Image (cartoon, rainbow, N blue to C red; front, side):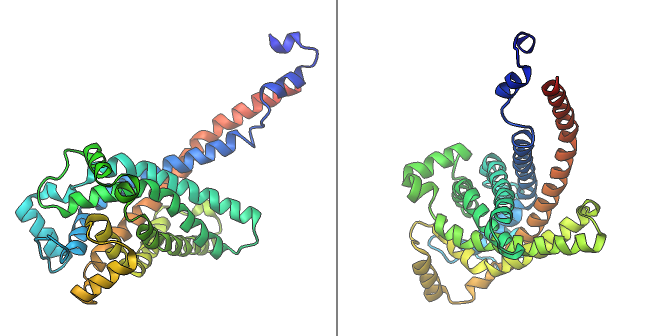
Length: 328
């Protein structure tokens, strides 16, 4: 009716919808797809690998103040926890993961794709530098959600017995103990020192692998889940090994309040426990991280393709109707 009563329907139409589908609908759709695919894939991967993460946390914390357990390695730790505490103890802290990791992974992958596209478009950086930079940036964004999750999760994993009634109780307890910076964001910079380089290394290797696979198959459309799983496993393994020592430091800072600062914590661990402690949890970290990376990236790539395919017909139909209305 509005278009019928106006002397210039085209101008009225443009006032009602000043943004073209290309500049709004497609961009908004892509961001939502990145967020949804990232959140879903992160929850799947973290759920599948959480038991190994519990053992990793115990291995990193043994030798710390008050740690009353001693494990010889990943398998011994796994069996000992199941025998003495029951199988459900392997999933300690998963409540905070289920609550927060979808948001964290959504922000992580969404900001990575956004930064990658922006750097390609607005800078002269090479592909490798773009992937490294975007990966580091993405971790900084996701860490604002991951860090509180890690603090609560790892405190529960390191404890023999029950610590919190649930994830919200854990978040409130940590807030009461130290507020934002000394509580929920405790260890943020050690986390950035761990996962910033991790993400940079991971995406640098994965994107190179993906480019080689595209070159071999002739098209990105021909890539399938197997390509993504293999690339995620390789990239995750290398990044996990490279950043394992600083992950030990981060875990100690976040779980035990007697540790403060990256350099002082590393020096104290080296002085009290020796150099070998930095290698004790490496394979637990690899077994936790590499499959998690493989599942996450494969689920992300496949979910992204599926969601894009589902949303395209709606976009095309909407664009067609808007174009016809504008022309009329």
